[in-house]
Length: 374
Ligand SMILES: [Mg+2]
Image (cartoon, rainbow, N blue to C red; front, top):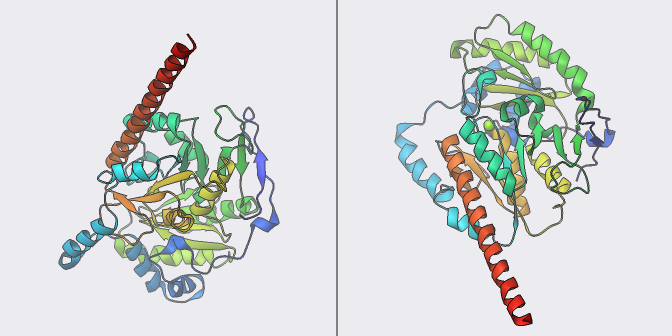
């Protein structure tokens, strides 16, 4: 694992301090897993090349609005064979987790909340919040989001969870040695803290440069900046790409990746949601355990890094939330947040009944022991 920089926060101050460990910063990966629809060639062009058209093509590729009718049926059949519904496979999933400690990782936007035009309005329902609260009673649960940690916490509002914001670059997890203990002091891990001033600068420049384009939303996610173009007329995508490019060319230490209707600008450090998942597992005391069963649910390209980590570890699995077939490292699928809620509720119910059964058996054994003594 990358050398880490863990800082214990003062829960009363509201101020999170962090120092920076130079060893945590490495050269940028040439083709980050978060950019699956964008080829290495395209990334190089984005960073240095002249063709704005390739930007717009990438923006379209990352933001599909429909599938070709001719291939839809074929795609769907193959998709459901290779990535069946996690609801249909529930019994098999439970069976695979038998005797292992399940740990839950949840993306936020598009997974727990619906995707909406205004990112500030991406609220989760009370029903979903109640479900996640119950989930956390039975399983260690972390939210892993591209949003800044404070923002995602303001949406979720559950103190019993762990939070990884800014694509895992801002983690509030359990303290070392504490494992999963409620009330344990939180530990902060911020591997990109030296980039904070640069991110603020770029955020302001992007706000200024894109101001004239109707519908653009620039969001400061603390360790990364998101440029949402969900509400921008497609005819203006070229102009938007040009403006973003003009800002980025001055910042070689930042890189660009794309999600669904969003351009993400973040530091060139080798850190992503997959690394955040590994960090949290280690913090929970499961680094070298063979009996841990991590489950990661997400809907975005950036979640692929976490799905990939689970494939490579051969532990647990990923669930992609999507209504359409996609290239993914996830093993299973769910259509939308409402299905995520049903899946989480089934997990809670299964665990509740399982614990009740164990308790009943334990009680019977104790009664037998007591009767033998008499
Ligand atoms: Mg998402």
